[in-house]
Length: 411
Image (cartoon, rainbow, N blue to C red; front, top):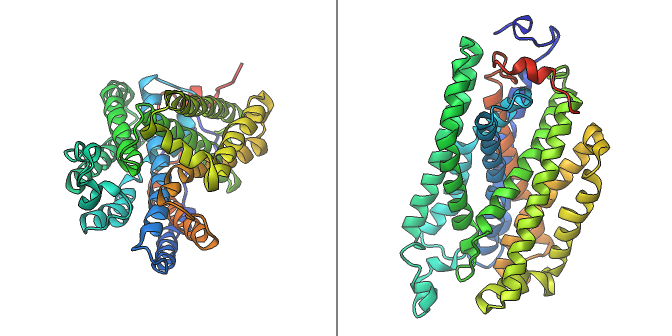
C-alpha cells in the first residue's frame, strides 16, 4: 500500500475500506432476499406477474441510473482534466463498476420473462396487440423481443467495458505512479463519452419509452441522462459523508469539494427541470392524440398527485433551498437535500413506469412490493460496490492532480 506521506495525504488519513467492506458486502444477499419477497407478493396478484414486473423494472432502472451517472462523472472528469474532483473520483469509479451485477438483475427480471413469452411489461411483445395496428406493425423491425434483448446486452457490455477500463487504469496508477496514465485516459475519454451518449440514449428509449410504444419524444433520452446525473451527484455528496462518519477520508474531502458537488447537483437539477418541462410543453400544445394521451394519463385522475409531487418536490422546493451558497457548504443541509433528491428521482421513475400498468396500480400491497423491489436492488448495488471498494484505495493516491485536489478552494 502506498504510504500517505508519499502522496500528499494527511499522515493520519484512512483511505481503505477494510473490514467495513465485508460487512457492507452482506447487503448483496440481503438485497436478493428483498427482491424474492417482492416477487412473492407479486405472485399473489392475479395478473400474470404484470404488477411485479413494473415494480422490478422501476427497481433495476433506478440503480442503473446510479451507475450510468457515475460513469459519466468519471469520463467527464478525465475529458476536462478536472483536478478538484480527484479525491472523490474513486467513489464514482467504484459505483460505476457495478454494471455486471446490474446486468444480471436486468436479465433475470426483464429479458428472461420477455424471451420466455411474458407480454405483461411491454405491449409490443404480444403479437395479438401488434396485429392489425399499423403504427405498431411499422415498428416491429426494432421492437421485437430478440433484437430488444440483444440491444440491452450491448448497452450493458459497453458500459461494463468502459467502467472497468477506466477503473482498472486508475487503480494501476496507485501502484505505478505513472503520470502518463492521465493523458491516455483523457484521450480515450473522448470516444468513450460518444459511446456513452449513444448507449445511454438507447437504453433510456428501450427500457422506458417503449413502455408506451405509440408515444415518443426526441427529448426523452436527455431526460433519462439528466436524472442519472442528478442521482450520482446526490450520491457523491452522501457516500463521502458516510465514509467520513466511519473515520475515513476525514482530512481529504472538505467543505470545498462538497460545495462543488452541490453546485453540480443544483445545475443538473435545473437541467432536468428544463428538459422535463420542455418535453411536456412541446407535446401538450402540439395536441397530437398519440402524444397528449401519455401526459393526460399521468397529470389527471388517479395519478395527478404524482405530477404535483414532482413539480414541488423535484423542482420548486429544492430550487429555493439549493440555490443558496450556505446550503451547499453545510454538510447536514446538503446531505438532507441529496437524500431528498434521490427519493424524488425514484418518484420520477415511478411516475413514468407505474401508471403504464393501468387503473389502480397504486394500492397498499403494491406500494409495499415497490418498496421491497427498490430496496432490494439498492442493497444489491451497495453490496457489490462495497466488495469492489474493499480491494482498492478510496482515493487515487498517486494521481498527479491529487495535491491540487487536496488544496482545492472555492472563490
